[in-house]
Length: 443
Image (cartoon, rainbow, N blue to C red; front, side, top):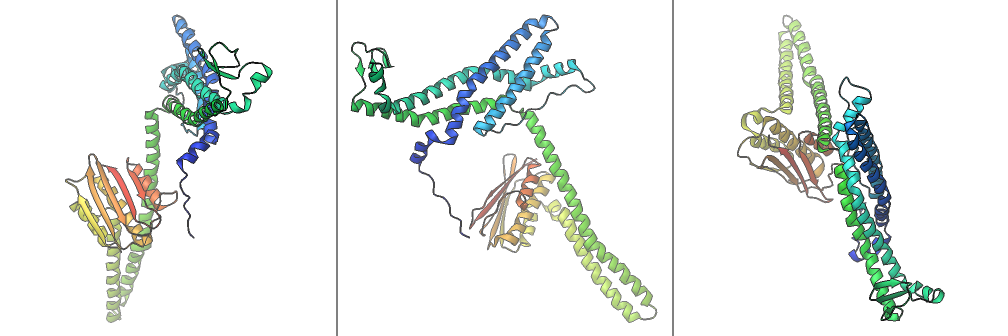
C-alpha cells in the first residue's frame, strides 16, 4: 500500500484562513473571557490578602488567609480547565495540600495551606493576571473589532448619512471619528478611493489580529504553566516514582526470563543427564558397551548444558564487559550479528559499571532488531563521551519504519533508559536509513 504524503500548505493560504480558523477563534475567546474572571480572582485574592494581613494581630487572620489561599487554588483549577479547553494546554494538577503526620483537624489544614508554596503561587497568579488580562483583552479585542469594522466599511458607510445625517467615517484634527458631526477642515471618507483604502486597512488588521492574539496567549501559557502547575520538585518526584516502577517491572521480567531459560534449557538437560547416568550405572555390569554409549550421550548433554549456561551468564552480565570494557564487548556483540557491523568506540575512560551494562544491552537489543526486522546490508555502532553524557548511535541501511510507539520493543527500551535519566531518539523514515541515538548519564 502506497502512502500519499500531503503537500505542505502555502503560507499565504494559512495567513488568509487564520482569521476564521478554529484555533484563532478559541484563542480570541480565551483572551476576551479571561478579563472578567481575572477581575473576580484579583478582587478575591487582594481582599483575602488585605483582610488576612490586617487581622494577623488577632487569631482570625490565619483562617482568613488560609481560606483565601484555598479559594485561589479553586480558581486556579478553573483557569487550568479553561486553558485546557481553549488552548489545548495540558497543565498537570499541583500537589495536594498535605498535613503533618499524625495531625488532623482545622488547624492542621490551615497550617498546611499556609506552608504550601503552590497555594501562594496561585495567589500570585490571581494578582498578576489582571493587568496582563486587561492589556491582552483590550489589544486583542480592539484589533479584532477595528479590523472587521473597517473591512466592512463599504457595506455600512451609507447608514449614518441616510438615517442620522452625519458622515460615517471622517478624519480631522480630533483623529478618526465615526458618526460625529462634521467639524471644520474634516475629511469625510466616502469616496471610492477612500472606501478601498479603509477596507484595505481593515483587511490588514483582520489578517494581523490572529497572530497578535497568538503572541498574547503565549504569555498566558507561561503564567498558567509556571504558577498554576506542579512545582519542578513535584514533577521530579513523579518521574522518579514512575522510573522506579519501570525498574521494578524490568527486573521482574528479567528474573522470569532467567527462570524460564533455566527451567526449559539447562535444568531439562541436567535432568536428562542424571537419568542417562543412572541408566549407565545399571548397565555397567551387564552391558559395558551400552553403558559407554549412554555415558557418551551424557557427555554431549553436559557440553550443551554448559553452552546454555554460558549464554545465560552472558545475557545477565558478560565477562568480557567486566574484564575489557565497553568497546571490546560491543565488538563481540557485533560479531554475532547477521549483518556486518562497524564498531567505533571513543572512550578515554570507562563509565560507571551500571551505565556500561545498560549501554551494552541497549546496543545488543538494537542489533537484534537489525538482524530480525531491518533487512539491512550493513550497520554501524558509534559510542563516545560528550561532557557528562554517554552517547550511542546505531545506524543501518535497512527498510526503515521503526518507531517508539507504545507496544513496540523500542518503547520498552526507551522506558528502561528513562529510568536512569537516559533518552532514546529514533530517526527512521520509510525506506530508511535508520539512526537510533541513545543518551545516558556518564555516572
